[in-house]
Length: 205
Image (cartoon, rainbow, N blue to C red; front, top):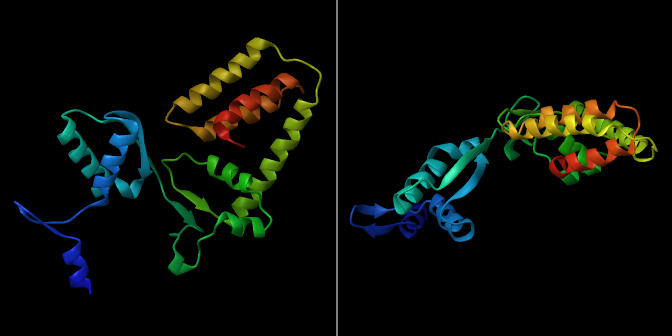
């Protein structure tokens, strides 16, 4: 059966038997839906060899020019310091987390605490801490939401500038999250809450 399957997956070419690679589909789809050149191509670090190298080779050979401006590769998520895999029985879904009493947004908060280029180690202790911190953040922001005081525009502009600088620094969301936390320590103000909502267009919390 394996030989039969391999035969189906091959075709004749002037250079010998050819094998399709699913990276050719990515080049075709990106060209169809995003155009000849697009800004950002993402993927896991495991896609750098073979997958993305072949995409670059075939797309640039066809177009005669660079087709992607920026490549962003996310690192792996570990579980208790080791590899996550079904065979080890240590894969968890969002539904599993909900069953254990965690908010899906608490998991998102957990993920935002690591840069996408660095490994993220999942533990339930870490999820407990993320759930506590996320709930605390909501409580503090509610106090700002219901406040009647205002904050000086220049102070808000400073936080917005810091937040934007963090996001534009290779998507440094842990630093951006830190800017949000620093801002929440200001005197209760509805302006702080409105600025937090502006930040949330990026954070999605």
